[in-house]
Length: 113
Figure 1: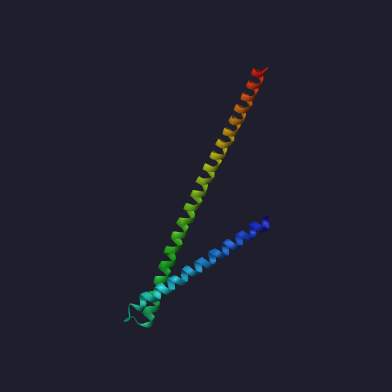
Figure 2: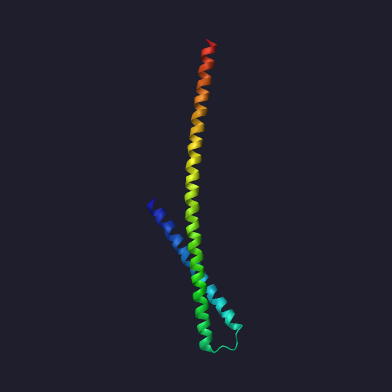
């Protein structure tokens, strides 16, 4: 089981790496498109604008991912709490049902004598 967890963790890390790499590449493409709209920039200015644009986009993306991750953790906690409560209710309802059926059977048996 530990190797399954390790494999799943490794795959999740690989997926995260690939998604992040794609995000950075998309930022580069958008920076390039943005600077294409500014034909009067010198090569050095263009490179600086692209660098700043990419840095800003990456910072924004990282902040967004951190917020999403934090919210996912909160939702996981809420879901776990609700699941435990529901499971306890189901077990209690099952016990009450078994008790009621048992009591009914006992009553019927006593009345049938």
